[in-house]
Length: 112
Length: 114
Image 1 (cartoon, rainbow over the protein chains, first blue to last red):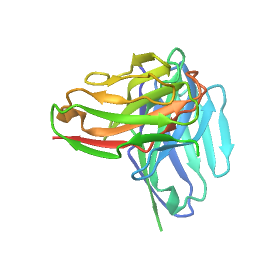
Image 2 (spheres, rainbow over the protein chains, first blue to last red):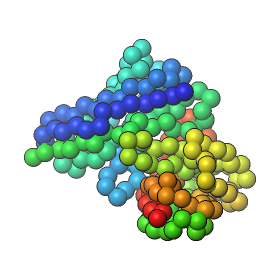
Image 3 (cartoon, chains in turn brown, cyan):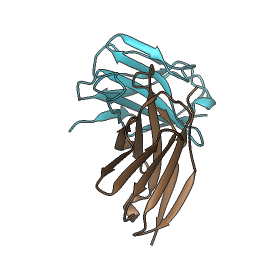
């Protein structure tokens, strides 16, 4: 079955870049997503990438996909205190319809 | 404003007392789904619905029921809640059931069963 893994915690200084990593096992992934969850709130879609793309950039966010290694990363440039949150990667896969398989989430803490 | 609305936000109940968590979306989305979030496990799908009167089990459906009588509403029913159903629940919707249709999430319902 499909499995998505993330490291649990990441701490960075304000102004630095953050890189949040994710690995997945399902080779039939179609789309890969990054969601942000702030305390007491739902999940906010940040960005997503189609599985035949290597990179996608959207303002301060850069998504890199290494399909051979089944590795996805989210880089946040110039990290701000407002970026402190839990970040989830998720995938959909061939035959799964719109079902998202989520990672366990990475808690990003931005320090002054 | 386009949104997915869940009610209530917080709920404390006792074992065996039936409850319903409501979910409504105003985006005319076909696809709706329920997830539960538990520490260290991420989010797991409970049930989903691809359209009115069409529902199916997700990965963790035991102890839950759903219905989809209207397009906008997708309530989650716990007939006899147990403490292992204490969790944070999210409803989500998307335009279609195709895998390239991003999910929009509600703000969550925190359920405690004692």
